[in-house]
Amino acid sequence: MEKIQMTTPLVEMDGDEMTRVLWAMIKEKLILPFVELRTEYYDLGLLHRNETRDQVTIDAANATKRLGVAVKCATITPNKQRMEEYPQLTEMWKSPNGTIRAILDGTAFRAPILLPCIHPVVKNWKAPITIARHAYGDMYKAVDFLTQEPGTATLTFQADSGAQQSLTVQHVDGGAVWQGMHNTTNSIRAFARSCFQYAIDTRQDLWFSTKDTISKVYDGTFKSIFEEEYETRYRAEFEKLGLQYFYTLIDDAVARVIRSRGGFIWALKNYDGDVMSDMVATAFGSLAMMTSVLVSPDGTMEFEASHGTVTRHYYRYLKGEKTSTNPIATIFAWSGAFKRRGELDQLPALVRFGEAMEQASLETLESGVMTGDLVSLVDEGFEATAVSSEEFLDAIAARLVEKLA
Ligand code: NAP
Ligand code: MG
Image 1 (cartoon, rainbow, N blue to C red):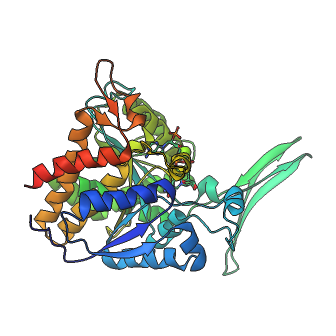
Image 2: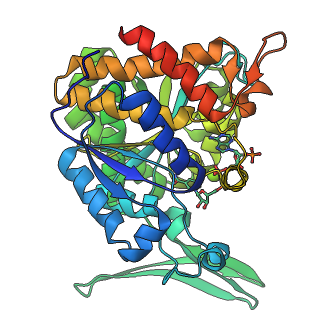
Image 3: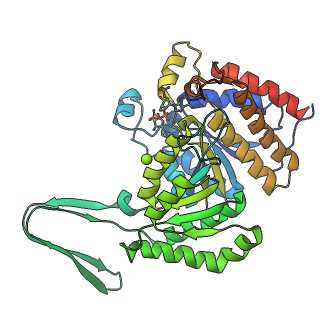
Protein backbone atom coordinates (compact mmCIF):
# COMPACT_ATOMS: atom_id res chain seq x y z
CA MET A 1 0.00 0.00 0.00
CA GLU A 2 1.31 3.44 -0.90
CA LYS A 3 1.53 5.78 2.08
CA ILE A 4 -0.57 8.95 2.23
CA GLN A 5 1.57 12.06 1.79
CA MET A 6 1.47 15.27 3.85
CA THR A 7 2.74 18.68 2.72
CA THR A 8 2.73 20.75 5.92
CA PRO A 9 3.67 19.22 9.28
CA LEU A 10 1.33 18.97 12.25
CA VAL A 11 2.45 20.14 15.67
CA GLU A 12 2.64 17.02 17.84
CA MET A 13 2.65 17.53 21.62
CA ASP A 14 3.46 14.38 23.53
CA GLY A 15 2.32 14.03 27.14
CA ASP A 16 2.31 11.93 30.29
CA GLU A 17 1.47 8.61 31.93
CA MET A 18 -1.12 6.25 30.41
CA THR A 19 -2.03 8.61 27.59
CA ARG A 20 1.65 8.80 26.60
CA VAL A 21 1.65 5.00 26.35
CA LEU A 22 -1.53 5.08 24.23
CA TRP A 23 -0.05 7.88 22.09
CA ALA A 24 2.86 5.69 21.00
CA MET A 25 0.56 2.70 20.36
CA ILE A 26 -1.82 4.79 18.22
CA LYS A 27 1.09 6.06 16.13
CA GLU A 28 2.58 2.61 15.72
CA LYS A 29 -0.65 0.75 14.91
CA LEU A 30 -2.99 3.29 13.29
CA ILE A 31 -0.85 6.01 11.71
CA LEU A 32 2.70 5.10 10.70
CA PRO A 33 1.70 2.09 8.54
CA PHE A 34 -0.56 4.34 6.44
CA VAL A 35 0.74 7.92 6.48
CA GLU A 36 4.12 9.44 5.67
CA LEU A 37 3.73 11.33 8.93
CA ARG A 38 5.24 14.81 9.14
CA THR A 39 5.16 16.47 12.54
CA GLU A 40 7.06 19.06 14.54
CA TYR A 41 7.45 17.08 17.75
CA TYR A 42 7.36 18.76 21.19
CA ASP A 43 7.75 16.64 24.29
CA LEU A 44 5.39 18.13 26.88
CA GLY A 45 6.02 15.26 29.28
CA LEU A 46 6.40 16.70 32.78
CA LEU A 47 10.12 16.00 33.11
CA HIS A 48 10.94 17.61 29.78
CA ARG A 49 8.84 20.67 30.66
CA ASN A 50 10.90 20.83 33.84
CA GLU A 51 14.23 20.50 31.99
CA THR A 52 13.29 23.31 29.60
CA ARG A 53 11.76 25.45 32.36
CA ASP A 54 8.45 25.09 30.51
CA GLN A 55 9.89 26.76 27.39
CA VAL A 56 8.83 23.67 25.38
CA THR A 57 5.16 24.46 26.06
CA ILE A 58 5.59 28.02 24.81
CA ASP A 59 7.50 26.78 21.74
CA ALA A 60 4.76 24.25 20.99
CA ALA A 61 2.06 26.92 21.23
CA ASN A 62 4.00 29.27 18.94
CA ALA A 63 4.56 26.46 16.45
CA THR A 64 0.79 25.85 16.49
CA LYS A 65 0.21 29.50 15.62
CA ARG A 66 2.65 29.17 12.74
CA LEU A 67 1.46 25.82 11.34
CA GLY A 68 -2.26 26.14 12.13
CA VAL A 69 -2.95 22.58 13.34
CA ALA A 70 -1.80 20.69 16.45
CA VAL A 71 -2.57 17.47 18.27
CA LYS A 72 -1.91 17.19 21.99
CA CYS A 73 -1.62 14.28 24.41
CA ALA A 74 -2.92 14.73 27.97
CA THR A 75 -0.34 16.14 30.38
CA ILE A 76 0.14 16.30 34.14
CA THR A 77 -0.55 19.67 35.74
CA PRO A 78 1.67 19.48 38.82
CA ASN A 79 0.15 20.04 42.25
CA LYS A 80 1.60 19.54 45.74
CA GLN A 81 1.24 15.78 45.54
CA ARG A 82 3.04 15.65 42.18
CA MET A 83 5.88 17.75 43.61
CA GLU A 84 6.42 14.94 46.13
CA GLU A 85 6.06 12.26 43.48
CA TYR A 86 8.62 13.97 41.22
CA PRO A 87 11.25 15.47 43.58
CA GLN A 88 13.36 16.66 40.62
CA LEU A 89 10.75 19.35 39.75
CA THR A 90 12.23 22.79 40.27
CA GLU A 91 8.86 24.58 40.13
CA MET A 92 5.16 23.80 40.24
CA TRP A 93 4.77 24.42 36.50
CA LYS A 94 1.53 25.93 35.28
CA SER A 95 -1.10 23.95 33.38
CA PRO A 96 0.17 23.47 29.80
CA ASN A 97 -3.40 23.82 28.54
CA GLY A 98 -3.69 27.19 30.28
CA THR A 99 -0.41 28.38 28.73
CA ILE A 100 -1.40 27.21 25.24
CA ARG A 101 -4.88 28.72 25.56
CA ALA A 102 -3.44 32.09 26.56
CA ILE A 103 -0.96 32.15 23.64
CA LEU A 104 -3.56 31.06 21.07
CA ASP A 105 -6.28 33.24 22.64
CA GLY A 106 -8.49 30.24 22.03
CA THR A 107 -11.83 28.80 23.06
CA ALA A 108 -12.20 25.12 23.96
CA PHE A 109 -15.00 23.18 22.23
CA ARG A 110 -15.94 19.85 23.79
CA ALA A 111 -18.09 17.30 21.98
CA PRO A 112 -19.08 13.71 22.80
CA ILE A 113 -18.66 10.78 20.38
CA LEU A 114 -21.99 8.95 20.14
CA LEU A 115 -22.59 5.22 19.66
CA PRO A 116 -25.84 3.51 18.67
CA CYS A 117 -25.36 0.99 21.52
CA ILE A 118 -25.01 3.62 24.26
CA HIS A 119 -28.04 5.83 24.76
CA PRO A 120 -27.68 9.24 26.38
CA VAL A 121 -29.52 9.64 29.67
CA VAL A 122 -31.63 12.29 27.90
CA LYS A 123 -33.47 10.04 25.47
CA ASN A 124 -34.26 12.63 22.79
CA TRP A 125 -30.57 13.60 22.34
CA LYS A 126 -29.69 12.09 18.96
CA ALA A 127 -26.71 14.23 17.90
CA PRO A 128 -23.76 15.61 19.88
CA ILE A 129 -24.05 18.86 21.80
CA THR A 130 -20.79 20.81 21.64
CA ILE A 131 -20.03 23.08 24.59
CA ALA A 132 -17.93 26.18 23.93
CA ARG A 133 -16.66 27.52 27.24
CA HIS A 134 -15.14 30.98 27.51
CA ALA A 135 -11.77 30.35 29.09
CA TYR A 136 -10.88 33.73 30.59
CA GLY A 137 -11.94 35.80 33.60
CA ASP A 138 -15.14 36.12 35.66
CA MET A 139 -15.05 34.09 38.87
CA TYR A 140 -11.77 32.42 37.79
CA LYS A 141 -9.83 35.67 38.07
CA ALA A 142 -11.79 37.25 40.91
CA VAL A 143 -10.84 38.59 44.32
CA ASP A 144 -13.12 38.10 47.30
CA PHE A 145 -13.25 38.56 51.06
CA LEU A 146 -15.43 38.20 54.13
CA THR A 147 -16.23 41.14 56.43
CA GLN A 148 -17.80 41.09 59.91
CA GLU A 149 -18.86 44.67 60.68
CA PRO A 150 -21.57 46.97 59.36
CA GLY A 151 -20.24 49.12 56.52
CA THR A 152 -20.18 49.97 52.83
CA ALA A 153 -18.29 48.45 49.88
CA THR A 154 -17.55 50.50 46.79
CA LEU A 155 -16.31 49.52 43.34
CA THR A 156 -13.72 51.92 41.92
CA PHE A 157 -11.95 51.94 38.59
CA GLN A 158 -8.83 54.09 38.45
CA ALA A 159 -7.92 54.76 34.81
CA ASP A 160 -4.25 55.14 33.88
CA SER A 161 -5.23 58.56 32.49
CA GLY A 162 -6.28 59.67 35.98
CA ALA A 163 -10.04 59.45 35.36
CA GLN A 164 -12.07 57.60 37.95
CA GLN A 165 -15.39 55.76 38.07
CA SER A 166 -17.04 54.62 41.29
CA LEU A 167 -20.18 52.80 42.45
CA THR A 168 -21.58 51.78 45.81
CA VAL A 169 -21.93 48.02 45.89
CA GLN A 170 -23.98 47.78 49.10
CA HIS A 171 -24.27 48.99 52.66
CA VAL A 172 -24.60 46.08 55.09
CA ASP A 173 -25.66 45.90 58.74
CA GLY A 174 -23.50 42.86 59.62
CA GLY A 175 -21.25 40.14 58.24
CA ALA A 176 -21.01 39.92 54.43
CA VAL A 177 -19.08 38.34 51.55
CA TRP A 178 -17.77 40.34 48.60
CA GLN A 179 -16.31 39.55 45.23
CA GLY A 180 -14.70 41.65 42.51
CA MET A 181 -14.46 40.11 39.05
CA HIS A 182 -13.88 41.26 35.49
CA ASN A 183 -13.61 40.32 31.88
CA THR A 184 -12.02 42.20 28.97
CA THR A 185 -13.83 43.21 25.81
CA ASN A 186 -10.91 41.82 23.77
CA SER A 187 -11.28 38.39 25.31
CA ILE A 188 -15.06 38.40 24.87
CA ARG A 189 -14.63 39.37 21.22
CA ALA A 190 -12.05 36.61 20.61
CA PHE A 191 -14.48 34.16 22.26
CA ALA A 192 -17.30 35.29 19.98
CA ARG A 193 -15.15 35.04 16.85
CA SER A 194 -13.91 31.55 17.73
CA CYS A 195 -17.52 30.43 18.26
CA PHE A 196 -18.84 31.84 14.98
CA GLN A 197 -15.84 30.52 13.04
CA TYR A 198 -16.15 27.05 14.53
CA ALA A 199 -19.88 26.98 13.81
CA ILE A 200 -19.09 27.76 10.15
CA ASP A 201 -16.26 25.19 9.99
CA THR A 202 -18.40 22.42 11.47
CA ARG A 203 -21.71 23.53 9.86
CA GLN A 204 -23.62 23.72 13.12
CA ASP A 205 -26.02 26.27 14.59
CA LEU A 206 -24.64 28.42 17.40
CA TRP A 207 -26.56 29.05 20.61
CA PHE A 208 -25.37 31.55 23.20
CA SER A 209 -26.90 32.25 26.57
CA THR A 210 -26.23 34.52 29.55
CA LYS A 211 -28.31 36.18 32.28
CA ASP A 212 -28.44 39.65 30.75
CA THR A 213 -31.87 40.47 32.26
CA ILE A 214 -30.23 40.58 35.70
CA SER A 215 -26.60 41.34 34.84
CA LYS A 216 -27.47 44.16 32.49
CA VAL A 217 -24.03 45.66 31.87
CA TYR A 218 -21.77 42.65 32.48
CA ASP A 219 -23.70 39.90 30.67
CA GLY A 220 -25.29 42.56 28.47
CA THR A 221 -21.82 43.34 27.09
CA PHE A 222 -21.27 39.66 26.21
CA LYS A 223 -24.61 39.66 24.43
CA SER A 224 -23.98 42.86 22.47
CA ILE A 225 -20.43 41.90 21.42
CA PHE A 226 -21.74 38.58 20.07
CA GLU A 227 -24.53 40.44 18.23
CA GLU A 228 -22.14 43.00 16.79
CA GLU A 229 -19.70 40.31 15.58
CA TYR A 230 -22.54 38.33 14.06
CA GLU A 231 -24.01 41.27 12.19
CA THR A 232 -20.73 42.71 10.91
CA ARG A 233 -18.67 39.60 10.17
CA TYR A 234 -20.62 36.35 10.10
CA ARG A 235 -24.30 36.86 9.16
CA ALA A 236 -23.74 36.55 5.41
CA GLU A 237 -21.80 33.28 5.74
CA PHE A 238 -24.33 31.86 8.22
CA GLU A 239 -27.20 32.64 5.86
CA LYS A 240 -25.37 31.17 2.89
CA LEU A 241 -24.84 27.91 4.81
CA GLY A 242 -28.34 27.91 6.29
CA LEU A 243 -27.03 28.17 9.84
CA GLN A 244 -28.69 29.92 12.73
CA TYR A 245 -27.28 32.13 15.49
CA PHE A 246 -29.64 31.98 18.43
CA TYR A 247 -29.36 34.00 21.65
CA THR A 248 -31.55 33.23 24.62
CA LEU A 249 -31.52 33.63 28.41
CA ILE A 250 -29.65 30.84 30.16
CA ASP A 251 -32.72 29.48 31.97
CA ASP A 252 -34.59 29.24 28.70
CA ALA A 253 -31.53 27.68 27.04
CA VAL A 254 -31.32 24.93 29.69
CA ALA A 255 -34.94 23.96 29.07
CA ARG A 256 -34.50 24.01 25.29
CA VAL A 257 -31.25 22.01 25.40
CA ILE A 258 -32.91 19.23 27.41
CA ARG A 259 -35.83 19.07 24.98
CA SER A 260 -33.61 19.31 21.86
CA ARG A 261 -32.31 16.51 19.66
CA GLY A 262 -28.75 17.95 19.87
CA GLY A 263 -26.51 18.78 16.93
CA PHE A 264 -25.52 22.37 17.78
CA ILE A 265 -22.86 24.40 19.61
CA TRP A 266 -23.79 25.93 22.95
CA ALA A 267 -21.53 28.85 23.87
CA LEU A 268 -21.32 29.69 27.56
CA LYS A 269 -19.54 32.06 29.91
CA ASN A 270 -16.72 30.59 31.96
CA TYR A 271 -18.66 29.36 35.01
CA ASP A 272 -21.74 28.30 33.06
CA GLY A 273 -19.50 26.31 30.70
CA ASP A 274 -17.64 24.68 33.59
CA VAL A 275 -20.89 23.39 35.10
CA MET A 276 -22.80 22.59 31.92
CA SER A 277 -19.93 20.73 30.25
CA ASP A 278 -19.83 18.24 33.13
CA MET A 279 -23.58 17.81 32.98
CA VAL A 280 -23.64 17.28 29.22
CA ALA A 281 -20.61 14.93 29.29
CA THR A 282 -22.17 12.76 31.99
CA ALA A 283 -25.54 12.62 30.29
CA PHE A 284 -23.92 11.52 27.03
CA GLY A 285 -21.95 8.67 28.65
CA SER A 286 -18.22 8.56 29.31
CA LEU A 287 -15.43 11.10 29.78
CA ALA A 288 -13.26 8.80 27.67
CA MET A 289 -15.53 9.60 24.69
CA MET A 290 -15.27 13.40 24.95
CA THR A 291 -13.16 15.21 22.38
CA SER A 292 -11.85 18.72 22.77
CA VAL A 293 -10.51 21.25 20.31
CA LEU A 294 -9.02 24.64 21.07
CA VAL A 295 -9.88 27.14 18.33
CA SER A 296 -8.39 30.62 17.88
CA PRO A 297 -10.30 33.44 16.24
CA ASP A 298 -8.13 32.96 13.10
CA GLY A 299 -9.08 29.28 12.81
CA THR A 300 -5.92 27.73 14.31
CA MET A 301 -6.89 24.41 15.92
CA GLU A 302 -5.35 22.23 18.61
CA PHE A 303 -7.03 18.82 19.04
CA GLU A 304 -6.99 16.71 22.21
CA ALA A 305 -8.98 14.36 24.44
CA SER A 306 -10.98 15.93 27.29
CA HIS A 307 -9.77 13.44 29.87
CA GLY A 308 -6.47 13.49 31.76
CA THR A 309 -3.49 11.14 31.86
CA VAL A 310 -5.48 8.28 33.52
CA THR A 311 -2.98 7.92 36.36
CA ARG A 312 -4.63 4.94 38.05
CA HIS A 313 -4.33 2.84 34.91
CA TYR A 314 -0.72 3.96 34.44
CA TYR A 315 0.35 2.55 37.80
CA ARG A 316 -1.28 -0.76 36.91
CA TYR A 317 0.51 -0.65 33.54
CA LEU A 318 3.86 -0.07 35.31
CA LYS A 319 3.25 -3.24 37.32
CA GLY A 320 3.00 -5.15 34.03
CA GLU A 321 -0.79 -5.29 33.72
CA LYS A 322 -2.41 -4.93 30.28
CA THR A 323 -4.92 -2.17 30.98
CA SER A 324 -8.22 -1.57 29.21
CA THR A 325 -7.81 2.20 28.84
CA ASN A 326 -10.03 3.79 26.22
CA PRO A 327 -7.99 5.42 23.41
CA ILE A 328 -11.01 6.73 21.44
CA ALA A 329 -10.82 10.42 22.38
CA THR A 330 -7.07 10.42 21.63
CA ILE A 331 -7.62 8.69 18.27
CA PHE A 332 -10.23 11.33 17.42
CA ALA A 333 -7.75 14.07 18.33
CA TRP A 334 -5.41 12.65 15.67
CA SER A 335 -8.18 12.13 13.12
CA GLY A 336 -9.47 15.66 13.72
CA ALA A 337 -5.98 17.04 13.13
CA PHE A 338 -5.54 15.03 9.91
CA LYS A 339 -8.91 16.18 8.58
CA ARG A 340 -8.10 19.82 9.35
CA ARG A 341 -4.57 19.59 7.90
CA GLY A 342 -6.03 17.91 4.81
CA GLU A 343 -8.65 20.65 4.37
CA LEU A 344 -6.14 23.46 4.76
CA ASP A 345 -3.59 21.85 2.42
CA GLN A 346 -6.20 20.52 -0.02
CA LEU A 347 -5.21 16.90 0.48
CA PRO A 348 -8.43 14.87 0.09
CA ALA A 349 -6.55 11.63 0.81
CA LEU A 350 -5.53 12.92 4.23
CA VAL A 351 -9.11 14.00 4.99
CA ARG A 352 -10.34 10.55 3.96
CA PHE A 353 -7.71 8.93 6.15
CA GLY A 354 -8.98 10.89 9.18
CA GLU A 355 -12.53 9.81 8.38
CA ALA A 356 -11.44 6.19 7.94
CA MET A 357 -9.72 6.21 11.37
CA GLU A 358 -12.99 7.36 12.92
CA GLN A 359 -15.16 4.88 11.03
CA ALA A 360 -12.84 1.97 11.83
CA SER A 361 -12.97 2.94 15.53
CA LEU A 362 -16.75 3.27 15.62
CA GLU A 363 -17.34 0.02 13.71
CA THR A 364 -15.04 -1.83 16.12
CA LEU A 365 -17.08 -0.51 19.06
CA GLU A 366 -20.36 -1.39 17.35
CA SER A 367 -19.10 -4.94 16.80
CA GLY A 368 -18.98 -5.23 20.60
CA VAL A 369 -15.20 -5.03 20.98
CA MET A 370 -14.53 -2.24 23.47
CA THR A 371 -12.64 -1.10 26.56
CA GLY A 372 -13.89 -1.81 30.06
CA ASP A 373 -15.26 1.67 30.76
CA LEU A 374 -17.83 1.31 27.94
CA VAL A 375 -18.97 -2.25 28.66
CA SER A 376 -20.89 -1.07 31.71
CA LEU A 377 -22.66 1.64 29.68
CA VAL A 378 -24.06 -0.31 26.72
CA ASP A 379 -27.77 -0.96 26.32
CA GLU A 380 -29.27 -4.08 27.86
CA GLY A 381 -29.05 -7.00 25.45
CA PHE A 382 -26.04 -5.62 23.56
CA GLU A 383 -23.17 -8.11 23.69
CA ALA A 384 -19.90 -6.44 24.51
CA THR A 385 -16.47 -7.81 25.42
CA ALA A 386 -13.85 -5.84 27.32
CA VAL A 387 -10.41 -6.10 25.71
CA SER A 388 -7.05 -4.50 26.51
CA SER A 389 -6.08 -1.20 24.86
CA GLU A 390 -3.62 -3.08 22.70
CA GLU A 391 -6.16 -5.66 21.48
CA PHE A 392 -8.65 -2.88 20.87
CA LEU A 393 -6.16 -0.92 18.73
CA ASP A 394 -5.26 -4.09 16.80
CA ALA A 395 -8.95 -4.63 16.03
CA ILE A 396 -9.27 -1.03 14.80
CA ALA A 397 -6.10 -1.39 12.71
CA ALA A 398 -7.50 -4.50 11.00
CA ARG A 399 -10.62 -2.58 9.98
CA LEU A 400 -8.56 0.40 8.88
CA VAL A 401 -6.50 -1.79 6.53
CA GLU A 402 -9.74 -3.01 4.91
CA LYS A 403 -11.08 0.51 4.52
CA LEU A 404 -7.94 1.83 2.91
CA ALA A 405 -7.40 -1.13 0.61
P1 NAP B 1 -8.36 11.48 34.32
O1 NAP B 1 -6.97 11.21 33.90
O2 NAP B 1 -9.29 11.98 33.29
O3 NAP B 1 -8.94 10.14 34.95
C1 NAP B 1 -9.98 10.06 35.89
C2 NAP B 1 -10.65 8.68 35.84
O4 NAP B 1 -11.56 8.66 34.73
C3 NAP B 1 -9.69 7.54 35.57
O5 NAP B 1 -9.08 7.07 36.74
C4 NAP B 1 -10.61 6.53 34.91
O6 NAP B 1 -11.46 5.90 35.87
C5 NAP B 1 -11.50 7.42 34.07
N1 NAP B 1 -10.93 7.66 32.72
C6 NAP B 1 -10.53 8.85 32.19
N2 NAP B 1 -10.10 8.68 30.93
C7 NAP B 1 -10.21 7.37 30.66
C8 NAP B 1 -9.92 6.56 29.53
N3 NAP B 1 -9.40 7.11 28.41
N4 NAP B 1 -10.18 5.25 29.58
C9 NAP B 1 -10.71 4.68 30.69
N5 NAP B 1 -11.00 5.39 31.79
C10 NAP B 1 -10.76 6.71 31.78
O7 NAP B 1 -8.39 12.55 35.51
P2 NAP B 1 -7.53 12.69 36.85
O8 NAP B 1 -7.21 11.34 37.40
O9 NAP B 1 -8.25 13.66 37.67
O10 NAP B 1 -6.16 13.38 36.39
C11 NAP B 1 -4.95 12.68 36.10
C12 NAP B 1 -3.91 13.66 35.58
O11 NAP B 1 -4.37 14.20 34.35
C13 NAP B 1 -3.67 14.85 36.50
O12 NAP B 1 -2.26 14.98 36.71
C14 NAP B 1 -4.19 16.06 35.75
O13 NAP B 1 -3.39 17.20 35.94
C15 NAP B 1 -4.16 15.61 34.33
N6 NAP B 1 -5.19 16.19 33.44
C16 NAP B 1 -4.79 16.62 32.22
C17 NAP B 1 -5.70 17.12 31.32
C18 NAP B 1 -5.19 17.58 29.97
O14 NAP B 1 -4.01 17.50 29.69
N7 NAP B 1 -6.05 18.04 29.10
C19 NAP B 1 -7.05 17.17 31.63
C20 NAP B 1 -7.45 16.69 32.88
C21 NAP B 1 -6.52 16.20 33.78
P3 NAP B 1 -11.12 4.48 36.58
O15 NAP B 1 -9.82 4.65 37.27
O16 NAP B 1 -12.28 4.32 37.50
O17 NAP B 1 -11.08 3.44 35.51
MG1 MG C 1 -16.35 21.44 35.64
